[in-house]
Length: 222
View 1 (cartoon, rainbow, N blue to C red):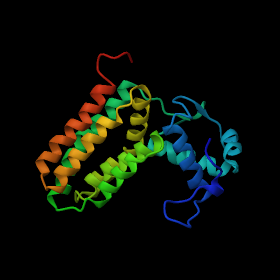
View 2: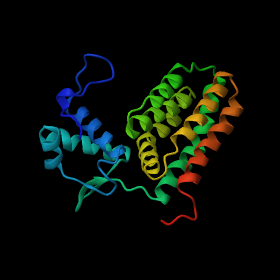
View 3: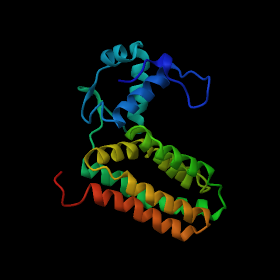
View 4: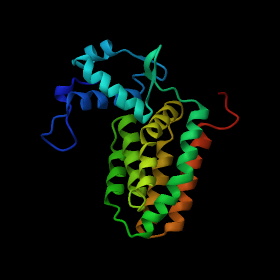
């Protein structure tokens, strides 16, 4: 179970999270580790008691998570964890496949520094659970496209980050494949460090397409 907000901190020392930020992080963590399961109702009063806060930060956190795609809000049913099926996974990854390889190649072409990308892979290698690993992987991917020079493209890809993390976590619960994906990440990083923009585009397209093909094949049951 996630900790109350008082004990949760930002990644840099000494900075306490606000109630809403801490509750948001806690709910996100529990979704990405499967403690809160796809389709599960998210009741404000229960979450407030669970995290030791009032209902207000819970309500604000759920609104933010709905905006990023991890939570679904319904007028009649309230909030629930987004369910991931083959159609949704393919929609998320199809959009990434259209945008991310191009953005990454442009980032390589401008001579971007890759310190953040390598740091993200180090964190993923040391991850304690699927949530930490998935979010570190998303940080790696962001480092690949962040310098593409097109803020609209960066924003579009940023808006997919949490949903990508959710799809990854659901897939790994069925079939742990992060070691294979980690090898692909390091190959992409080596190509980026060598300044091989075309190679990065090819490797990244194969990486994104390969993940969804392995984990959400066309002939699988819905």
